[in-house]
Length: 312
Image (cartoon, rainbow, N blue to C red):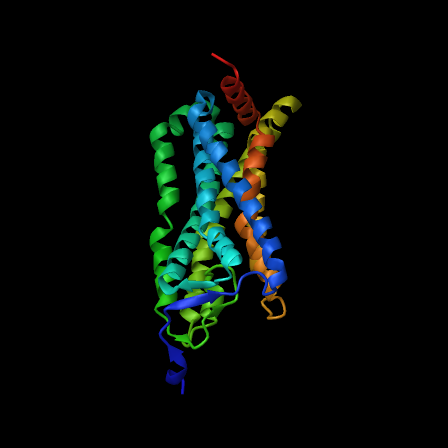
């Protein structure tokens, strides 16, 4: 009987955020606005760090990489959701679903790695300022960035492959707006305990370990700041890493809220809404956090806008 219920999947159906047709237009406009602001804000950060010599430092090199990552992170899921809301066609091919999941997992791993790398950069700058130019030279920065971009790819390719080699039952409806492992495993007609164990290992290694390194870096940073004799010096030093701390709180805070929510079937729509916040909120707010709380970014923005507006 089990074999009769299995079928070869060629496509899935993403149920999306809301089944109500009346909400589709409102959701489309809201999500499109969020996506455009997210992409525009992060591209502006990338452009500023490229064209302004004052921002050619390791801190802004990592920030530009983080902004590029945010564009990719949201672009993996949001355009497909917008197309579904606009056309009403919620289908996604088997291969398309696998690619979307793999990229989403890889980008999540990369963001966690970059946040840890940026914390290490701030640790060296504040705790070892005299050796900072030597330790965080161009070669080291490129190596750290390349490692952050690639470290999770093999593991996430394996995780994705282990999901999509499973036999799926007759239902092809994914109760989500993107191909997330958890709802896909619910459609499988096989033992998924190995997949769940692997997920916990991935979260520990690529999520909790970088978070522990961030906490360790900031423990040393705060200890160093507290030893400074000048209150003004303490304030200025702490302000150099406050934006990064807020970004860390957004990314890990939204992730913790998402994955610690009740797993009861009574909260499916709430879970999808939290997933949307987890997907877009850090990427949406990061450009504002770094531009509003960072005088270097503000100065570079004003300088380049003035240069463009001033006739030669």
